[in-house]
Length: 304
Image 1: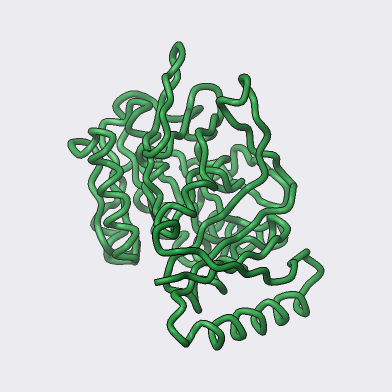
Image 2: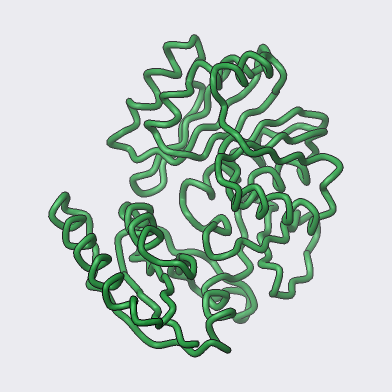
């Protein structure tokens, strides 16, 4: 079988919208290629923030690919018409079956985040230096490796605020990258929740690969009112890297599960929609103690 690779170059602010569109019409996964520069004599990489990003997706060439390609092209046209954010033209190329399984892996590299965190895709070699904390990650084509600004900010905040013995909740865990970081930084336990069965499988596998299954549990579900009541007051640190609207909708439950003095790190928030998350969180009685901004993305740090 051959595959059709679809590629769109876009501004970082539009990456999630483009990824969602491509994921809707393709079956072979989505990969995000962020701009990087070589450091340490070409052995390591640094992500360049604020630069155009490439989003790749894959379609099996089975006679239906042209219809799907046209649907993606039409969807991109509508995205461009909705706002000023940069979304480039759709580019395509044919990828052979033997190359498809590994094509997307070329877009992921060993990445340094914060002071000590290192994200190592499972297929790349890396020898840690000094007190570096290495997270081995097999993201699959549907999840990021910490390169997106929202994830990067969450990881940096988790590094600063995770204390030994903490109880942590990761809402919308995805690949489990935030949970891995919290556990390796000393958290006693990390409970992960996601409404995607694919995410649950990915996060569980990554916990196993990092030898953290004894401290990380992953469940399929949502943080609704009933779950918030069941978990009331149990967590010292809550991580929620989702989107502003969803964070706002579950704000009472996020506040409820925090222990007194507990910290919430809320990310995935476009600056223009900050109020959709911040105002509902403040209404629960949480106090904003800090915030971080990269490009047009905001991370809120709140305390109970």
